[in-house]
Amino acid sequence: MAPKPFEEKTKPFRLVKYFTFASLIAIFLGTVILCFLNIHWARALQFKKSQDYSRLLIENLNHQIYTQFQVPVYYLFGKIQLSNRKQFELMDKIVRNTFHSFKVDLVNLYDADTNIISYSFDPDLVGKEDLGGDGYLKALNGESTFKLVQKGNVWEKLLGIPKEIKVVTFAPLREARPLTPISGEILGVVEIVQDLSEDYKTIFRFQIRVTITCAVVMIILLVILIFIVKRGEEIIQQRTLERIRLKEQLSRAERLSSLGEMVAGISHEIRNPLGIIRSSAELLKKKMEKTTPMSTIPDVIVEEANRLNNIITDFLNYAKPHPPNFGPCRVGEILEKNITFLRPEFEAQGYIVNKRYNGNLPPINADPEMMYQVFLNILINAMQAMPGGGEIQVDMESDGGTVSIVFKDKGKGIPQEILEKIWDPFFTTKETGTGLGLGIVKNIIEAHNGSITIENRPIYGAQVTIKLPVTRES
Image 1 (cartoon, helix red, strand yellow):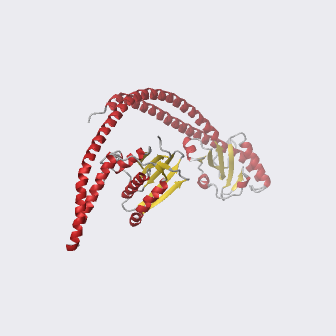
Image 2: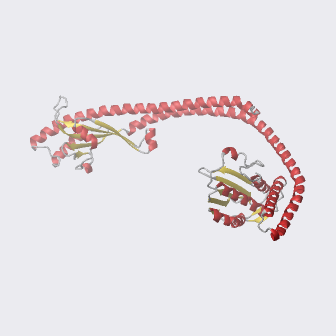
Image 3: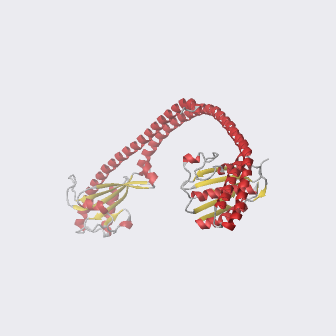
């Protein structure tokens, strides 16, 4: 199949546009990825720095506790017992002096035998049991552990700016003499909590400045590109679409004109003998009732004649529709007539119609009979979309200038390739039918200066939306 003229003319523009867009997107994504990698590397470096920092603090605390607390307490009291007020106050003074001016939020000292917090910056934690977890157990085995704790929602954590970022360190407290390595007996476990929130936010702010600068430059380039490409495409598209539109209108007008002339010419020729066939069949039925009352042949002839007459009527209504007989009417009353007419079939096949009217709907200027035909056609289509029964939702509302009627079913929806052809005359997916039903519906709505759209719903089923003016335009 040969390419369309519009596609041939816009292909160079599209090639440039797609190539440039792809390049800009690739550069932008690369910048964002690099930014996040830099944040990750900076955070990893900061975490490593915090670990080394914690080791030095704990080593210093070991020496201070041994020289300033353990030795004097054994000398004065004979044993260490932090429940003693004087011992606790001495420990508090030593710990706070050791961590003074350092970014330490919390210090907990655990008993080596009972996992009880013997000392804490937070008085409410003193005496609590089993709060150390795995960090406490590993510290008793001589292993120091470091854990990064973040508080915030998922997006804050993903971007690297949670509300709080803290490093929790568990390490053993050992007997340590001055100027000697820490290698003595484990006396307890120390937990240190450091707040790194401000450091991490500083890193993030720097990366944001870099990302924003790159984004601004790329947005400027993108705007310039879009303006140039769009301008060229619009000029070509306007000319091509106008030519196509005029050709389609001319072709459609010619087809409808030919169809109208053909239907008008043959309809009378068909209907005359058709009427004779039907009346003859009815007469034949009366005569056969006396001799062979069980024969159904006349009934079949009458039924098929009526069906053929309906087909001819559809042709006439589509090719040469009658002008609407306008008058004030309410769509709610018309719809109620449709539902009343179809109620036996609804009940027999398991259909449920849910109506939702938003406010007091104003009357419209329309042909009630034509509106009845429109709603009937749409309700029947909704039923056919759900052969096993189901729910049909009808919503009606008004914005003052128009009345909107929305029909929703819960069928399988309309395939995209069919959705593009539903308005074509004689197109149908049913075994029986002329394919003119929706075409007639559209002609009626447009004759009322309204609009109709059919689309698939987001989850399942199809949706038909009709909008009619409250007062007919002159």
